[in-house]
Length: 222
Length: 338
Ligand SMILES: Nc1ncnc2c1ncn2[C@@H]1O[C@H](COP(=O)(O)OP(=O)(O)OP(=O)(O)O)[C@@H](O)[C@H]1O
Ligand SMILES: [Mg+2]
Image (cartoon, rainbow over the protein chains, first blue to last red):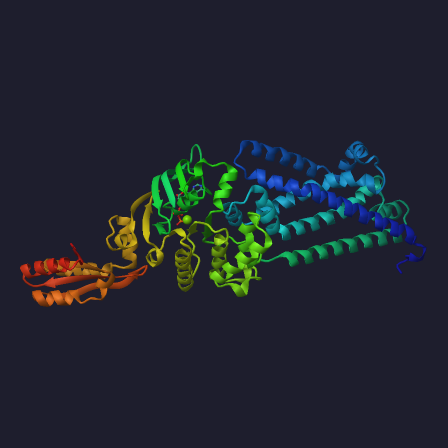
């Protein structure tokens, strides 16, 4: 078929690469949410505050987030190599890719969180205050449940972005499908490997998006 | 009980400021339904939001249930707010929670245990007539049902005071009446003090005991609804009432026609059981004066019936004077219109 021969494909390598991509995406998504969600909440809360201290907190965090988001991801990986080594002890393999992936994606997710929280009806938040809710209770019992569909949509976008980021981090020694595609397809002209690897990534993104959309629908009450 | 002392609220800072309330004083007694009426921008919402300090007054003191709220720290204020229920024009329900969970919300905030929450929520569902809808989400309810959920939620923590910010303004007339009836019910059953703000005289007339008229950030008139409603003093009050009762243009035409002929025009007010008695016809048959009704209303304020007739008296001046005197002897309120 089109001069392609899939019989020579090393399926073991393909399986390993798929597994690597999934773990890079999975772990980094986990840590991105763990860091990005509180960061997004802080951005939302401090932006609306009347206190001068909090407004400055917002400006500082917002500035750092913007910087992290404007650096091209490849450059971020390379410049973070020493930090990565410090945090996880290696810059290689799946483990070595997680810190840059998280540092690259968490600010992005934090902005998505901030935007979803802003969508929450201010009247409902006020009603909670009128009922004697503390700030923590407003976050846990109003902001998060009310913005859940938006947060899930944000996590889905972030997961998809992470899949494409894993392709880049793979080049710096992480492995995974993207790495495989580039190594075989680009450097060795083995188009078959590249096609299958890319196909796998497409399928992964489709599955992520579908699952995310399903969850959003499931949790939407409007 | 609610007491506002010298409340001033200034919005904005530096260059652009709006004074929404200026040195406002107000007392609402326990168990009363107190209405505040005013035009758009008069400061109604600001006033009611100052009571639970959703809006912090620039100056002045807010006392609720004997506590000076303006003096409290954050924690203590949260505690006190649990004793003050509030319902809103746009309901402000949690869209992600069922009717049951919305009503349970204040109890969860207070950390009540599950069994206690269940008992309370079920009792409230019955009170507001939503037993069949407890598992629904707010988006599946009508406006009136949403407000019922709002009322049940506000009552969950057994507040002594209920604040209503234009609670019926987003509802159609029938639903408005059913919500007003519910408010009156809970006021009677639970002895709840209710303060409501509205721009509709109808709301005041249906359920309030006392009314205050707010204009440009101050109270211009205040008193029992019957008094304010039947004998309005301030132009703003008159405007609100004439839109609801006194006939406006047609009456003016009648007055213009009759006045030059030297025919006296009077407004007679009947209150309570007087409304159903034949006093007027008895008196005129005694004095021999003829009358024509130029305009008239018979209605009720809360549950007090009243009638207000604007009449012209034709006859000898002495006979007319005697008629007026006799009506007043019978404790009717007679007012000369000119
Ligand atoms: N958050 C705010 N910032 C600045 N000005 C405000 C704010 N809220 C209200 N105002 C101003 O204060 C005045 C009183 O407003 P308020 O909302 O209390 O009026 P209202 O009587 O409730 O009117 P409506 O019937 O339209 O709701 C208005 O002039 C309004 O523009
Ligand atoms: Mg208002």
